[in-house]
Length: 177
Image 1 (tube, rainbow, N blue to C red):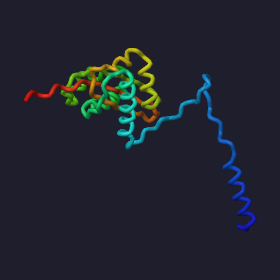
Image 2 (cartoon, one colour):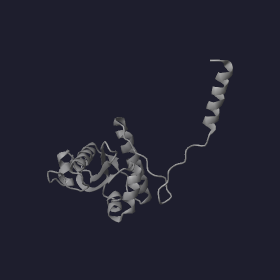
Image 3 (cartoon, helix red, strand yellow):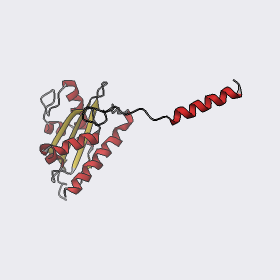
Image 4 (cartoon, rainbow, N blue to C red):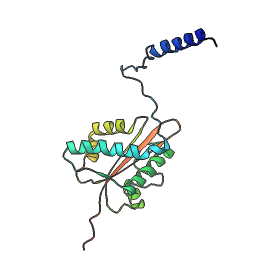
């Protein structure tokens, strides 16, 4: 390739790089259309801590004590998210008839079950949290001052649909000495 051709190619690349980016497609409401929120296998901890941090910020603002992630409640939440996907419906009962209380106990949670919120969506965990806070019944669960433990899990289908489950609980009283 001649020097002149190489310079012309370089100049064309620079001009292309300076071109305006493609416009973001907008929906009928004027807002950008959603993009697929793809969850990678190593994203679980980051997603759980974003939910924990976001929820705790809301709880602090409401004067409620902060929550701590709980491994047993996380397990119950992941199990239920997968089960909702298998059933293809967002509801609080497992395919075996289990309740949220049953699932927390099965996972080994020794405390008292406080509440569960669920969602079937293509939205991120923080968009889902924002939607939950807007609805009074789910907001009451999220801001329940008795809750101290948090379980948060999800299952993402190949289509991108995400099944979210958030479970709260109150730890068991420590044994007397």
